[in-house]
Amino acid sequence: MERAKFEYKTLEQIIEDCAKRALHIEFDPDLSILYEPIEIGGRKLGNRLAVHPMEGSDATADGKPGELAFHRWKRFASGGAKLLWGEAAAVVPDGRSNPRQLIACKENVRELTELVKQTRCAHRDALGTDSDFLIGIQLSHAGRHCFTKPALAFRLPVHDSFTVLDKRTREPLPADYPVVTDDYLEHLEESFVDAARAACDSGFDFIDIKQCHSYLLNELLAARTRAGKYGGTFENRTRFVGNVVRRIKDALADEILIASRLNIFDSIPFGKDPATGIGKPLPYEVPYELAWGVDESNPQRENLSEPIKLIESLSMLGVSMLSVSIGSPYWSPHLLRPFSRPVEGGYLSPEHPLVGVDRLFRLTGEIQKAFPHIPVVGAGYSWLRQFMLNAAAANVRSGRVTIVGAGRGALAYPEFAREGKAQGSLDSRKVCLNDSLCSNLLRAFASDGGKTPTGCPIRDATYREIYKLLK
Ligand SMILES: Cc1cc2nc3c(=O)[nH]c(=O)nc-3n(C[C@H](O)[C@H](O)[C@H](O)COP(=O)(O)O)c2cc1C
Image 1 (tube, rainbow, N blue to C red):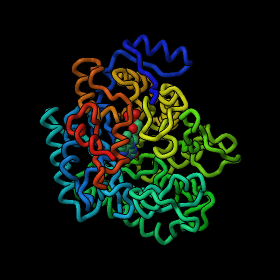
Image 2 (tube, rainbow, N blue to C red; image 1 turned 180 degrees about the vertical axis):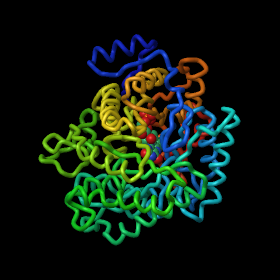
Image 3 (cartoon, rainbow, N blue to C red; image 1 turned 90 degrees about the vertical axis):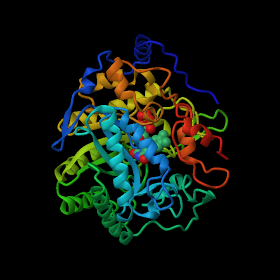
């Protein structure tokens, strides 16, 4: 399949191309600002670099971290980024996106404690101290993307066409499949509190209430057609997350920091044009009400008024850090992770990846400018390869973001933060090539039907052999 080429050898070349495309992506050769500490909720963070949550699908069947989870987390920790934003962990077993996802529950506290301990130790060994290193875990319910028995906040034919009864058999959703009941959601609020307690008992510094990427809590934010107390008005659509944050604060006070990774713009689903293989918007009607953070008269454009209103109230409730994202990995991957080559069977990017990077930076900047007192973690840097820290430094310096995260870039090159500091630049031979092999592994099942773990098959030999097991 054709790839969007990355042909820049020097900073000047990429700066010139951004200017030619009239994009507002800036690069700073001086990386020093990235290594200035900050305070988050009274705790010190030693630098402005983060590893984004990256599901590894490498837990045991009962959701305890497996051998490769230890491998992955320890590599991240010794890489020098001071914020390790642990991946999506389900709050209940039926909320898992894959059968090898972590589960944050009291039965797994012993193993999660060991994961935190070994991760801290790896960071200390490599960096000398872990007193300014924060580790979190993302609390999640996969909603319509559960690997079996999807949990839908509302029905919508275009979203339902991406939803399957079981990810292993790909059986489609029956027409009469029900949405989750209010009763289920009420109980689920308590499960989030239990999961937060388990995370706290395991020694995590922060929890993230996941509201992004079309998983359940993101979908609830857009549930305008849902009846009952979790649907319709803004107050009803944000009731779940508000209740969860309030109840966690009541239960744990300041024992653990509360963060949230939040979609600020859902946009619309894209599909593959059969003639060209390029992604194109699936048909939609306006006013478009069934997405979060969109302009109803043109849902391919953002309207940040509701996300901003939600962030205001989350901040009042005690959320002390945000990570922002956009789109869905299932129907608009080019929005949330600009790529060169699509996932197996996926569409070619409908835009130059730099356009996607620019959108992520611009929208993140709008949120950061609206909330200068809240540390916002920004995404979309990995496509920039060896120049990603130069863009990070420019964005931090101009106040468009407080902390910069790497997702795919960290799987490929976990020591990016340490090397950026020591060398003042990154090594182009170690960077992520944005070829979606990690996403292929995350989605696939091995030929024996078992779930494959994910990592970078290009840069990490551990995953090279695993990649060969794909069906
Ligand atoms: C294999 C893989 C796993 C991911 N897992 C998660 C996850 O658990 N939680 C989450 O919020 N985002 C997840 N993401 C999205 C990343 O955190 C990140 O937002 C995205 O890759 C864009 O950042 P990047 O350009 O640095 O890769 C995942 C992405 C990939 C490719």
